[in-house]
Length: 277
Ligand SMILES: [Zn+2]
Image 1 (cartoon, rainbow, N blue to C red):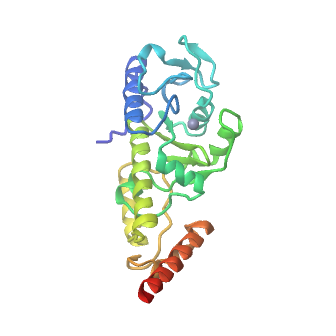
Image 2 (image 1 turned 90 degrees about the horizontal axis):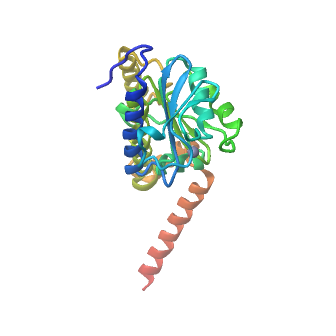
């Protein structure tokens, strides 16, 4: 269950313990490889507990974590904070309701970030409510000032953003909420991959259905997330590639369209060859 407590900071002790637990879940779920990813929690007006650089998120202990101020300067801890902390700090700076930020490279969501495909389709009611629309921030070299600048426009109105050719970033009013958004993001991206790219059939929620979910979301106290792109149609249904092709043109890349045409032509040729035998 989600509990929305306004502006209540977690204790440093609890934050450190929970960051280690979330890091382990992130690592166990394959959201990160090697020492990838980072997690932070706001524990005061000018104090953040964050993960250090060069450490696997699956094997952290509370003594490894670092305390920094909102400028990123280390207040305590023996290890160096991650260079990617710059983007976390920018989220806190842009949105003072945020209490925690998570960053990882989950495989399917990152693949969409590489393909340049935004996660803005209304497919899953829970994703519409808890996650919302997920835009893509333009590519920026990891660790540089370009990264925080690229995500800044999304921090106030969204709950998550894909980082082009890099990974995913989520935030929330608690670490639990930020991490759940990361899980929902990867889950949604995986289902989108299956339905649109593998099964080739997607029944999207229409605008009325999306509107009902947005109302529900507001009643839950979630004012962020944007509205997924929807259609007024009764239901957007497609079981065969033929009916979906035109509509999904703007979602899929040129290469995918070419690939699908090549596949169809190949199939027809093989069928003819087969009949000729
Ligand atoms: Zn990264």
